[in-house]
Amino acid sequence: MSNRQTRTDVILIGAGVMSATLGALLKELAPEWEVKVFEKLAGAGEESSNEWNNAGTGHAALCELNYTTEKADGSIDVGKAIKVNEQFQLSRQFWSYLVKHNIIRNPQDFIMPIPHMSLVQGEQNVSFLKKRFEALSANPLFQGMEFSDDPKKLKEWVPLIMEGRTGDEPIAATRIESGTDVNFGALTRMLFEHLKTQNVEINYKHSVEDIKRTSDGLWQVKVHDIHKGTTEYHTAKFVFIGGGGGSLPLLQKTGIPESKQIGGFPVSGLFLVCNDPKVVEQHHAKVYGKAKVGAPPMSVPHLDTRYIDNKKALLFGPFAGFSPKFLKTGSNLDLISSVKPNNVLTMLAAGMKEMALTKYLIEQVMLSHEKRMEELREFIPNAKSEDWGIVVAGQRVQVIKDTPAGKGTLQFGTEVVSAADGSVAALLGASPGASTAVHVMLEVLQKCFPQHMKEWEAKIMEMIPSYGMALEKNPEFFQEIHTSTAEALGLSEKKPVYS
Image 1 (cartoon, rainbow, N blue to C red):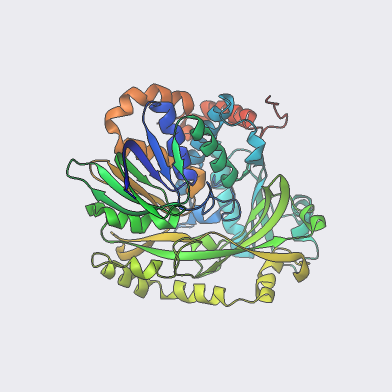
Image 2: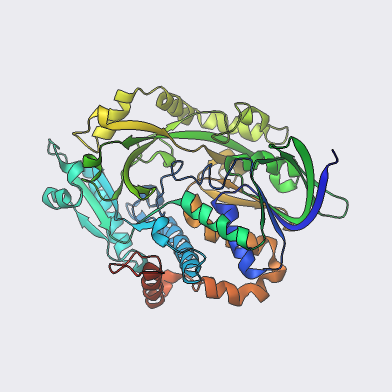
């Protein structure tokens, strides 16, 4: 059978939230462009974007303590928290635009209002939290945040956590009503449903095997049709690699200079999930604690109310683990085969530096159910083992690269790597990931289509009114935007009804 060969404008690899967001943006900005999507699994949003594979926190730095660090002089650096919050505001605006234009009909199918809280114990941590609260609540982006170290108040906020708590160790929490729980799997599926109506060709069960530059400067993507067992070749002017943990090996295949000296470190995760509806009903918040000493930032323990399949659920975790796979559905050879002559020294340097992290991950893998329950009981003293089961979360691949901080530095965050000419871009890394998808994809547009940004600007401003602006410096505008997005997304007290 002859190999199928086609030519197109844009190829998106991976049917996750990043490709969905980029596809949706491009279809608004350049509706005439031809777009093709290749996904190795049977549907959209089945890997990292899936609702069971991530924490679903609309990351706005309202509760995540690792986004605010204490400096040597005791003051709190809130720079990263402000940055992440600003980025989440862009997502809210774009999602609101989609709702107003009937591209998404029922926002509550993917986003729900839920208070975000930080909870700490011990004198030192309580003093840190109070300083953090003072630094953040002075900022317009964080208005409405409350602080309390009064057990009576905390019992109102989190009865399940305060029930049965003995001992007189100081305990404190901050709470902000404007937090959200986001079902990124549902959002991804909605966006792909929309893209189907926009003449985007979506190919499931198609695995990308190779990416090569052609003599005329285009990119040729070699695709294996898993269903038919055939090979296809597709060329495009622009390729976006949004394959979660699978992006690094594909980026390496492009051979672009920017892909060199980059490695990946896979981290897996588990959550405890509560099976007893009576317990689930007693908690209504996302409550983030402080990571243990030596634990990586993505292992901040948190107890989360989630809305999955229109049902309220309660999850606790994540417990980190180690697996050499780069995707949940990946291969045990992923890590080894990602080591290349150009990144071996970077990887080895990281291995030497991150011995403590490796030891921590191996210890986490070895934890018994009872040991995990002990960690949960630091949050819920009365938790019963039989009420909690386990769910395996998605794989995350942290970026390893050479930075001014040294060779083989492990990066925590999300990063776009693109060719100098903007013809190919890949998304690497993890949290805050999906929450900042709109910000990240705007960065892809700026890096890869600079020649179009001028003509696109008016449309971008229509979709994302605060584009290019710092909201914290424009408190009135922020207030206006926050109110209008809350209304469109059904996050305000009086929920609007959309037909």
